[in-house]
Length: 308
Ligand code: 13P
Ligand code: SF4
Image 1: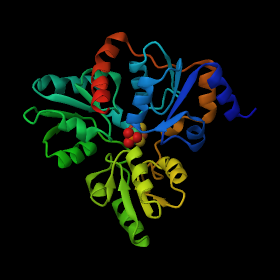
Image 2: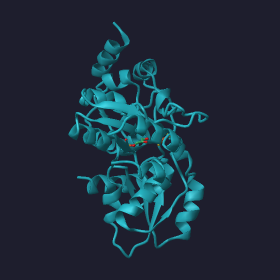
Image 3: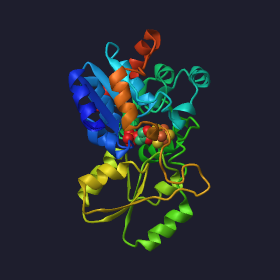
Image 4: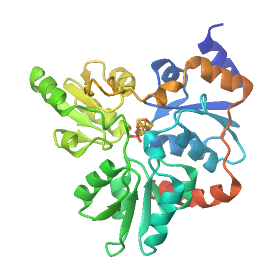
């Protein structure tokens, strides 16, 4: 039996579900029961009947699944699969900001730790951030954390002034404007599509801005066109599968940057072998203290309710 068959077999035996993000390597996306964006993955984690969840993504995603499923085993193939954006918001510093602004509603992007979620009023993802911000009465001031680029984008869309945390994703801040414009000139008529974690100058060039699932849906609506795709390159696998006729070109990153290929090193820590090992040995498992979990689940549930 090859690794793929062994994983499929074990998954059945253990009544496990494999949830994978679009940035995972193609072979993991192929063996997963569901591949999606952060919102879709949270929704699947909230409704699954499986006894065990194997999360092929990064730590904050698996942690969100554990917060929603305290009695299930939630496994992450590599515990070191973190997130630069989540790391840019340490809980103690965030608590200081929140406590200094008791009249503010705290909206936090799902890319953060359980401790930061526990300090928040509502969680959002890139696909529902606009709706969540608009759900807050106009006279209530908002703290938005940790992604300043998504925050700036939502400020522009909603006209709401928000207090922004100064966090960012290393992958989405690595795109080179000069190279992007050069590439665009080489492919006249192509459409630039971008993830809102990208910087404002990149977003200004885009004909569509949205979550990973939103970007795939947009390409599906324009199947015969050429796209320059400004997000993590792992998305190209599912996008090309969904729209085989489309020409997809990854947006270029700065050469001297560690993310020159616009790949997320954290997402790519998961491999098929590690996924098999974790399913077999039921480790590494995600744990969240009950004290934090009870607080962190409230803003996640508010988001899921507002996203129905
Ligand atoms: P979405 O898939 O929700 O758009 O998020 C992208 C991302 O950076 C996940 O880490
Ligand atoms: Fe975090 Fe960026 Fe990687 Fe997403 S792509 S997991 S935001 S570092």
